Image 1 (tube, rainbow, N blue to C red):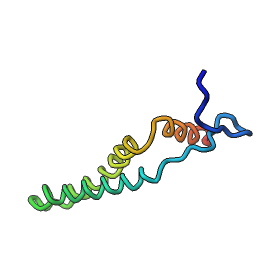
Image 2 (image 1 turned 45 degrees about the vertical axis):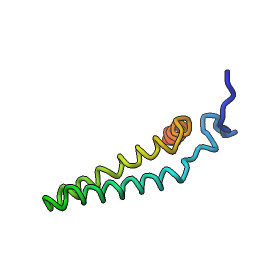
Image 3 (image 1 turned 90 degrees about the vertical axis):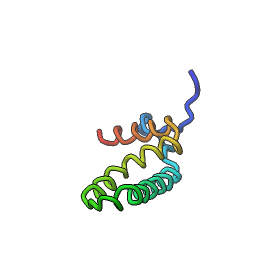
Length: 91
């Protein structure tokens, strides 16, 4: 068995101590979100001026930007450790 890259908690061995997302994930998500809203404004909003579509696109593109950013700037092992910690702390 391979050694684990994580350090586990001494009181609860199912919790990972050093699991944290890189700040690049949030910076990347913000950059992708701003770029997508800018391009939506440039391509669609100027033509139809539908504010409801702009608000819906802005709200829907925020989680999508975070997913794309975490795909690029984070590792699957770190994401799994963070999800594991969140589920373990619910119990």
